[in-house]
Image (cartoon, rainbow, N blue to C red; front, side):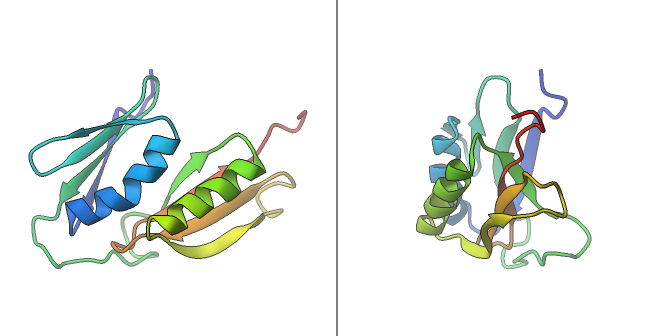
Length: 133
């Protein structure tokens, strides 16, 4: 059982954000459930991700580096998976903040990409295999 049960993200436009998140989460094996005004993705053994509408529309986008959201990192199985998820995200409208590359300051094995959506939500796809791999 994950320690974090669910993660709620407030967005300005739920249908637009759904179109941005859905291809990524489905590719990672999550199932989607639409509710009245919100959308959730779940997968056994993983934390549920929920998009909810802003109480005050038009108050976004979030600005990276301000108090609050920093980024959400998705661990994937290989560097090729990082590249593939980067391409899927770009196709769904995400903007590349950093193209896929090595991050030796984190570890000599760390390979990642960072992207932002129209709400300023930043995500990362990363691969950091164990030292023995």
